Length: 174
Image (tube, rainbow, N blue to C red; front, side, top):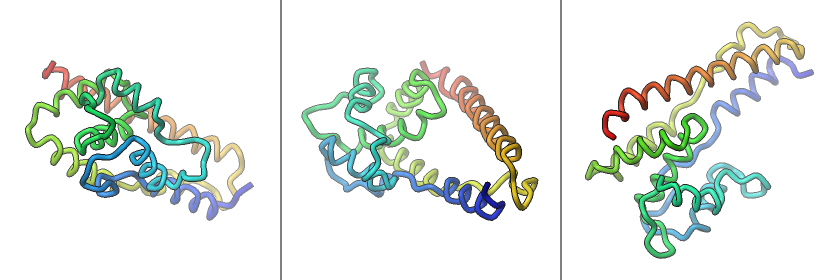
């Protein structure tokens, strides 16, 4: 089993994981493979078989009209920002809610600047080692399971809170 110190380091690494930011992308239109390369590089997934974003995902987002319509083979800044927003929101919100949110902010003429600012700000968010103060110096499986269940519960509660925010702040704009 791992020690408390090793568990703290493991969680610290996970809580401070890299994310993809608008500043990771050049200020020009990109082909889909270039976008995927930036995602893989920023998230340290170049060698991994499990990719954070794939061509199929992007095509599905386009078919579901989560992205503004694609013209040609390159993706302008607006669509790259939308992909970043979808990437951040997809683990928390259903696609229908993400579409609602993106549709409601696209009407703002400053949408690209707004998305850039918000995505850069949220990229700086990290999490402290919450809940580790109760873990013994040599945690057993029971303590690790307790921590897993607590973090899963918190993730679920945050998801419910996000859904409530969408209902409250974006449903009116339909």
